[in-house]
Image: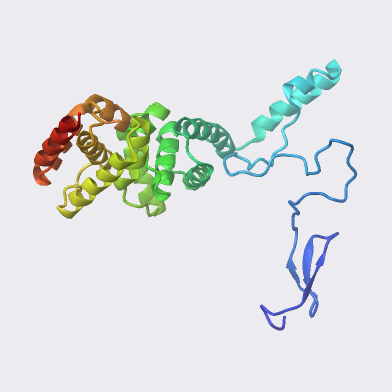
Length: 302
């Protein structure tokens, strides 16, 4: 075909094909028009659009499978017809492959966990895509479906820099934290997924919003984290723990006192971790005098 990328073509609407004008080569075929049907005749009040929901990777069949009769519709038929459709429905379930059955259950579980964690749709799609790869390669054998789903969601969150801890994943999925972490490391190693390193800064806005801290406290916490990074205090420590400790320090500096228990509950860590990270911050960054000075200023104003 002359001019591979510079050819004149025309669309053949009734065949759903794009054909080259010069040599007759079919460039694209079996095209699907997903736009609004403007040629049909509609009654008053009827929506001018094609029926059915859009395709979604979060569904095991991408939403394209037609199920044989819903139960409520079947029993409206005559007894003979009802038995016929019940048999067809049973056979439809029997002929589905093990992968289809696995995906049906897994995608339902994925939507439940993602809804509990309030994750955006783009993260859900990415997690569903990762799980499809895992199933196709047979990497789910010997592992519970819940742990693999939680690990895929965690990997998707890390890919899009959305801060979610393993403890939050464990709470949402009823799977042990260690099991999710183990499965997550196995998946990213086998699939070669490159994920971004989690940063304490990613947790500041969410934690401060839940704790109802002021924007000034949030900015001060970011400054504390920046100084901590300069002295390499954040390396080798959990990002959620160091972020929670920085918020706790900033809250004390701005007289927005929160208990260590409150901050620990929001971050999903223990009070001991908060206490240890707090001591490290005020010692290494020499913040103890600054905190006392701020407290004295606030008392004098009162």
